[in-house]
Length: 224
Image (cartoon, rainbow, N blue to C red; front, side):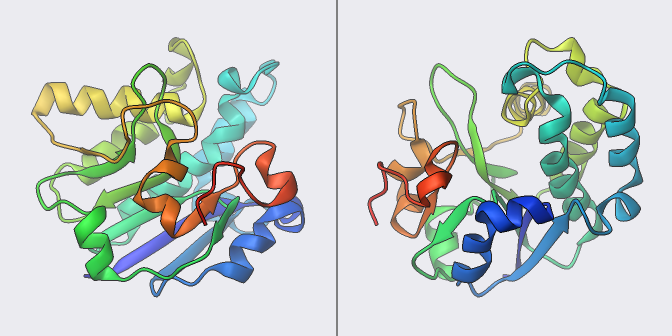
């Protein structure tokens, strides 16, 4: 299997915390960074159009800040639609700190499922944790799913939903394809809310220092 790891950040965030991602990344897979201060807008012009159309919208809370989280969505979907040579794509937040390497066999055992379109960190009474997403590039529904995600932003459809952050929108579209097409997906969650990544098998190899955790560069829930 050939795997691509995708993340996104800008130069300011690189200085604040993404430098830990870069300095600790130890997974033996190809890596692609969509830098918001680099050629991201050039490579994905629909992102720039979305930002320009909607940057005026008030965003007093992250849950309604569609622009802030649009970069990740466009990065992952662009990678899915333009990298046919890969068997799997990992989308992972730039506030991640890596502690142990993994390989294809580990990925096949714990994350990848041949019959599933994607693997995600579900939570029972809240939106999923989308700091880690895995996409099976050999599933026939993966590219249509990516196009549907882009459509939510290209046509500003996210603003018809109750919340506009990416985790909420990933769930909306994932559930839609599950119901409409019988698509199977692999829930990596443990049936509990909170920092689900830290409690799963992923928590044994890397730490997602989400939110205020990134200030210290370590999650109190971390097991490593």
